[in-house]
Image (cartoon, rainbow, N blue to C red; front, side, top):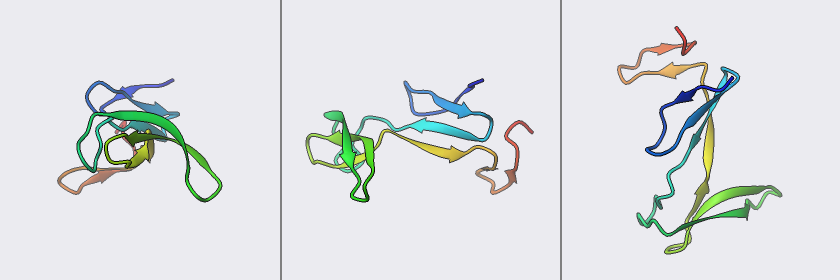
Length: 86
């Protein structure tokens, strides 16, 4: 069962089986700040094809989303938990 959790405004981070979560990246260029973004399949150079966001203004590419380990959370005060449900 998926659970919505915090993510960028207008998006949803999704928990995958309690162990990982997928966090979508905003379609704003991290290099130049442009909103002129398209989604393309990009050859990563190591034989893999990845769906990526691409800035039409400057050509910067970045992943559509990332997957993170949801079993260990480090808080701002540097404490941590091994289980986000704790």
